[in-house]
Image 1 (spheres, rainbow, N blue to C red):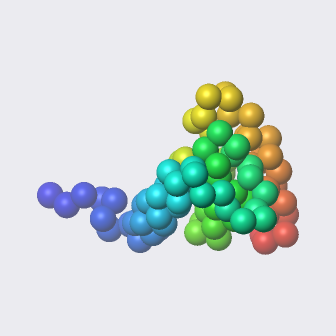
Image 2: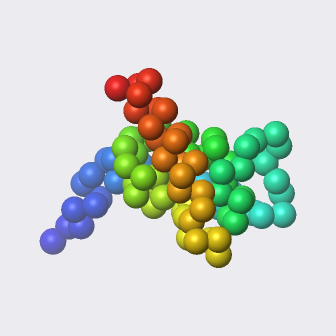
Length: 94
């Protein structure tokens, strides 16, 4: 029996790209140069959220899963800003 996730190119690309982004997020000692930090707890810049959208995320939950944001000690205060990014993207790209 095969794993259905292996047959879904969208999920596989999410997994690969998400893994790459997570590696960047884990490197907290090296700040991203001149990028607006959206998730300050995990040091995740706006660029990562834009990447998630370009990869096919269309809901706040998909974006949070993709980037790893929203799980910091602040209680997900970045969600409002992420929702604004999502709304802006959907308005201009749909």
